[in-house]
Length: 242
Ligand code: 6PG
View (cartoon, rainbow, N blue to C red):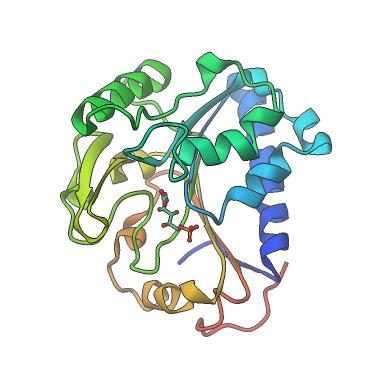
């Protein structure tokens, strides 16, 4: 687990994550004139998205040059309580002026394979053939999943398609997810992990267990694990708080 940074609290995690995203966005815009990011779903990143929308930080990023994607989506309509798009819309999009054509939500309301094909095409159109995300934000499930790459699913093994539909038995639900090839082609991958509920799975990854999240190994990019103290409780390390 390279790039491990332990922060003192969930609040500090959100601050460090938001500031890291802003720094990387500034670099991308200077070098390439735009910033392409895939957002994590779930609950952990929501405070980070809220901070990205706060006045000081929102003025630093030129949101008109940001291309926003999602790392995964539940197959539900965009106004459904489980929708990752809805979570980001309420925490971030409703508060910053990103042009709608630069917000590339996954159409969870479509049949799964159709939603995956549509998202794949949109991703291709923006990133190009071998295009790279500047940043991919990821969460960690207590079973070691990330995005919607759940243990034992074909999505974890996918090495051709950059986007797939996957039926998750344990949830009895369909998901659309980025796959490891496109995640590992990113310039920067940042895991956000918070809370004692994640301490055991984080220790399993630290010990080298090959869980889906362990397979996130950027080919030519940086990997950062931003972890709060509760989630790091079972890791054999001292200090390193920021
Ligand atoms: C999702 C996420 C998923 C999430 C983990 C952690 O759609 O739910 O993409 O991979 O990051 O399940 O979720 P929490 O942050 O809510 O613990």
